[in-house]
Image (cartoon, rainbow, N blue to C red; front, side, top):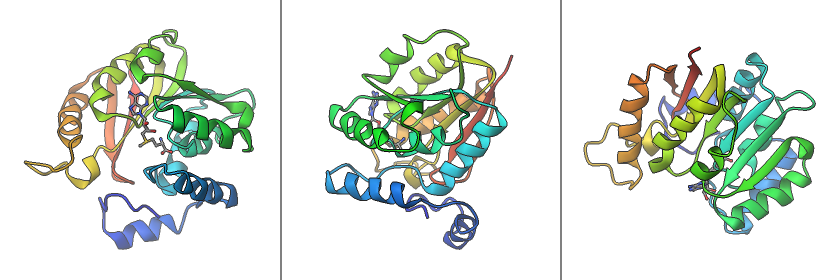
Length: 217
Ligand SMILES: C[S@@+](CC[C@H](N)C(=O)[O-])C[C@H]1O[C@@H](n2cnc3c(N)ncnc32)[C@H](O)[C@@H]1O
């Protein structure tokens, strides 16, 4: 179950989490190894992984791009929803995180479907072709979100999925003076995406709030 923002009551989060798939033994092992390696436990909760999988299946996604790999946890969740030949390209700035994720993805059941691209999110997104991607999942530096959405609007196919994590700013989105240094960037980003007519989007109250949007044609 999520340790992140209780956007809805803890009891309801526990209720819904108990009614969807949790981590399997491999993902539990990955998390323990990441913790032992000093990698922060800031991955999405399993129920958010399930939601990402449902959305990718409904969209019949084969080309997925993620910004923010960390240990490879969410990339593995997403790759498991793709058909054979599908792939997740996941972008990571930290060499330590990228190396850990590569090693664990190589041991996973979806090693053929996940590619870790090391670099800055904005730089790597700019190398990708227009209208070539079915879904983009943003889960990295929050001050980069506005730029990443510009690139997502370019690389997503019509009706492609835009997914953006931490819309509730670690539970501080309603705070006038949030303590978290990234919260103000999220507050500004939320106002911007809410008005962005290139996407039909809304915040789903799961995990720390997940923006789910569809690229208008
Ligand atoms: C919240 S974690 C990602 C969690 C992962 N999506 C999951 O749920 O398993 C954010 C990651 O973004 C990476 N990051 C930070 N700034 C970045 C940037 N400018 N470009 C790419 N990755 C970045 C961090 O090093 C960190 O590994």
